[in-house]
Image (cartoon, rainbow, N blue to C red; front, side, top):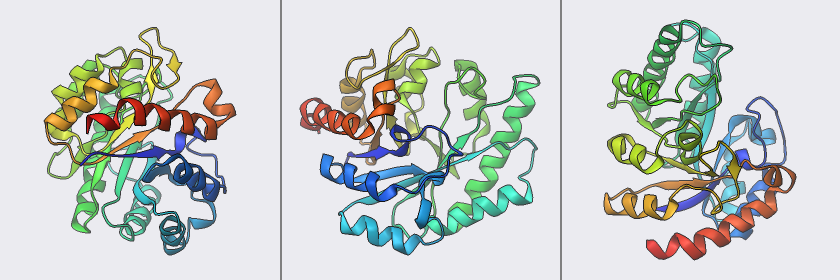
Length: 269
C-alpha cells in the first residue's frame, strides 16, 4: 500500500538550523490530508529529548512518523565517537515509532578531491550504522542529493554507491527531484534500483536544473507511481518542494501539493 506524507525540507532546507515549530508543521500536514511526516532531526525542537511527547503530538493528529532524516559528513573510514553516539541516539529514538526508518543523508563535500576515498568512507560508515540499527529493529535508507559537491549525484557515483552499500542492512531513498537535478532519467533510475527502494521522496524539477512547483516540472510522477504500484511497492512517498514560493509560504505549498496528488496520484492507487 502506497501512502503519502510530507518532508520537513519544505519548511527548512538547512540541516543544521535548529527550530521549534514542529507542532505548526504537523497541523499543516494534518489539515492538508497527509498521513505522516519525515523530518530532519534539527526540526525536532522541544521533542528532541522526548520521543514520547512527539508520539503523543502525532497521535493527536492521527499522523505517523515515517522517518527521521539524519545528516552525516563521515570524513573517515570509521565513524567518530561523536558521530556514532549521535546515530545511536536516533536509533533509540526511532524505536518508539513502529515502522519508522532512519533516512541517512550524506552531507555535501567541501570539494571533490579524492572523491573515491570520500565515497568509500561514507559507504562504510553507512553500512556500519545500518547494521547496528537493524540489530535493534530499525531500518535505514540512504538518500543521495544533487548539489554540485554532493558525493553521489551522477550515474557513475550511483554505480559506486550501490556496489558498496550492503543491501542486507540498508535500502535506498530515491529523491525524484535530486535525480533530475543530477542529470539522470528519473523513471529509469527508479527502475534500475527498484530492489533497493525502501522510502521515496517526490519534489519537482526541470531538466535545465530548476526547482519547480509540483506538477509544473518535467518529472513523470504519474508514471513513477504506476511503476511503483505495478512492482508492489508498499511504503511512503514523502512530498516536498524547494521553490522560492515554498520557502516563503510552505503551508500554501503543502496544500497545493495535496491538491495535486488527490487529482493526479491517489486515483492511480
